[in-house]
Amino acid sequence: MELRKDPITQTWVLQADGEVASPDRTVCPLCPGQEEVASPDLYTYPYGSSNWQVRVIPHLHPLYRIEGDAQRRAEGLYDKMRTLGAHELVIENPDHRLPLTELSDENVAQVLRAYASRINDLKKDLRFRYVTVGRNQGALAGQDLKHPHSEVTATTFIPRRVGYELRSAQRYFKLKERCIFCDVLHQELMQDTRTVDWDDLFVAFCPFASRVPYETWVLPVNHCYAFEEDLINWDVQLRFARFFKSILRRVTSIAPAYHLILHTCPNINAKYERVGNWQTVVEDYHWHFEIMPVIPSKSKSYSLKEVYYNSLAPETAAKELRNAGVAALAR
Image (cartoon, rainbow, N blue to C red; front, side, top):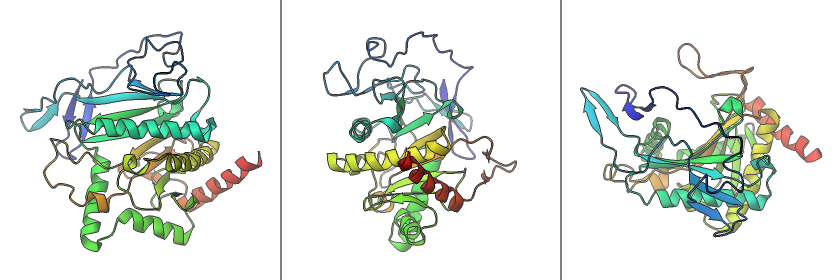
């Protein structure tokens, strides 16, 4: 496997020569009692306890390898390199059948704490320019292991969409000396037509130009450029866990399958990063989670012209998600 760069779109693409077959396991390797199979532990809570609540381990079939260096090289005008990086599994709880939305607020907060811990630790490795957390829920979203889990990845490049966001935020700040994300969320709160839920710390809304039905973003109300810098104390972790879980419950009540990705600040100290590239990132960027439901009957990912097609207006989606929360409370 190697990484190849599209010279036109500047996108790095993982290239494999055929699918790698997963071993046929009759026992889930992420369940308690299988710790020797799925090891070593990169993070555990409670630390040193055999009765763990959250574990982080190297991915069983990693897309990225942490050993060595990138070995960047050319093939004529094309660029390619090794799949240097990190690929980890966050095992969200010991129970094979207990989804994230059914955990206690405290347990969800411990999962979020594991995210922040691993991001902070991986950013100490100056080979990595970007570290994030993702989650594929359900077979339609490509969930490959049935045990509830998230994935942490670290790469030597900034993914294209995040790069677009960073550059757009930088241009907006240069023009107006304000964070574009802050301006967006303030307008959403003022109009209150696409908001799903909000409190004094966090807000969730369906974006104005949603790409798929029920696309939902979750952001802090107060400006902060990095998830791992914002969620540093237990009170905030617990508050966000309660809010985040309620949003995921609303989404899954309508769309059980979804992709979830964290967009946070890049590793500005990475050795591959250009000096001064993101000078205003602390002021112009705003961390957020993006939730992209998978609803085949209602959505096409792209039209023939590769423009996103969304068959449900975000105003309608937000209203349905708000009502979904009321229905969940009534049960």
